[in-house]
Image (cartoon, rainbow, N blue to C red; front, top):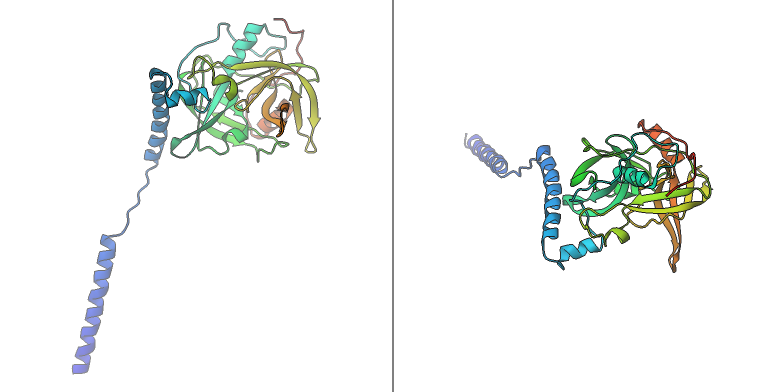
Length: 320
């Protein structure tokens, strides 16, 4: 009888100890809750905070660290508005545009692509252009290391517009297609779209539009810099083994121009400015490359994206 009683008390003590262990574990367990609405709210708040910070920089005294960063082209969401003096053509043109019409079209269609990383930290910028009412194209390498994106230009107004990634090429190797499609939920009136042409001809006149950091950092309007234009000629078309065509040209581009349009004098895209080839010991010996419009067409068709097609030829010679 004593033997049975002893084991009974041992079992009872073990059961009590087990219950106490479970109780204390449950009372002190870690709780982790993640609400997607809070994440989205933080993202929007981050963009608004960045815009407010930039406005404060402008209103502050000259020589502040933030203003110096603007001058170096290190930060750049756009705040102030503006519009081109001429009205962009309503439809794609097969004839050479007057100079003011071409400038107005490119200013209305070209945007600065802002890239943000973790905690909405500004990482850098590139260039893009509209191909549809709320859809634009840029280079994959501009956005591939970012987590969120926004676009801005004088035509779009003083508030950065959030955009989302829709599609991108497989990689961004310099001899491969390097494209990405971004889309905004709503774009203000005044934005224009560019038609996509085919490959240009050697010695054809071309115009590059974009936001090269080396040029916009000294713009008098540090928040909303002007779109930078450069005219040149096509030097050679270099077909790669994968049939990708690189367009070597002389229209000036620099860091920040990536993803920007290279157009003929009709305002139709013949290439997408992508990279600069230079020898490390000879900075002046540089080659400026765009990816051909034909490669962009192929990517857009494969992505099921609508766009306007045009010829790369213009009906007459340029007139200033």
